[in-house]
Length: 237
Image (cartoon, rainbow, N blue to C red):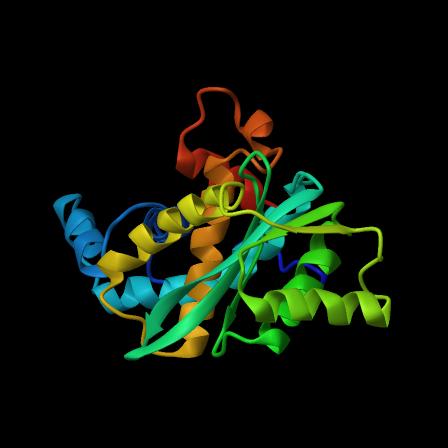
């Protein structure tokens, strides 16, 4: 992990206090609000800001916040359910590869311009790099994903003893989990670029992992800590 910038430096020179920035970013990523909705809520509390300001904060701070959350990540299970769904970016369909373990914990995600063997291999490499080697992988019937796993086994990147199976019933868990992300994306009224989409989806996935208690930070924040309280503790260096 790259060295973390002191949290005071992250917000140096900002017009708004760091607590306002953190609150807007975590609410935007966590709830079904458009940036205009959130700006209106802030105005109701006496804080006049443009919705574009909130979008700039999300783009700037989400990668930095992600580095800090990684310090508290819990390991996931070894039985993965892998699937892909589609999201619209600048009027074009892109593909979001995702996996959860057997209890629904998020394993990994990857946004791709294509739905093919190479995209599936990129996703699996990323998942194994961050979560280790699985014991089982459950797929749907899409042939490219099966060919990707065969390639990784042939190259030795994925051990041959890893069990691969196809089960619509077992993959219902990851298909249901897609809805969490897509429901949050819907109020955003379209993502304007691939980079913007990748950053925003990364932040949404992080917020969902927080809700699933995939980080140890909740204990540090206390049993009655609010969402902004937990985020502040996590972001502190």
